[in-house]
Image (cartoon, rainbow, N blue to C red; front, side):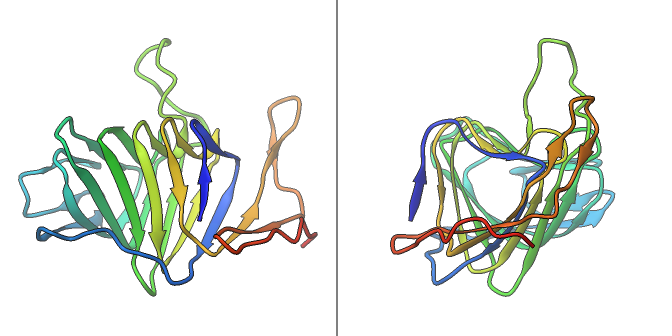
Length: 215
């Protein structure tokens, strides 16, 4: 397991595929709450999930299973209560054309588990829209102010189109066997492009990095 220190980020324009080995899963001491993404909105039977159009907010610790597609919206975790928030991504795709698709505003800890056999995707805006000039966060496709842990045996693709792919302002732990990275770049005038190069980075207690390779 590779522990990434405080204020860890994954670079701008990054597309990430997580292909995991045998990993742990979060504790499920209580019932799992389903959140079904339905394109332009979502549904959930729990009062701890607030849904306002394309904005889905989790307001209490617990275990939540997210599936489906949310277009031009976001999933947010915002709870001051003590305890971890466990998010199981079970075939979830979230995109946002003006902000971050998955953001943690407040929580003790958030654990994201990639359900076995699933592919999950996050894609953010090319230009972020903030409520006022003094606001500059969130600024990553997957953004967290709390401790963030990612595990599971599914796959996750994160596309950071404006800033970072993943940012945690607290701890960030990724329990995974392999990253396949495709990094973007920005020309001096601001125009973005994609070089024909990819990187493979093995993460784990017995991992080694063979170095970058041209694709």
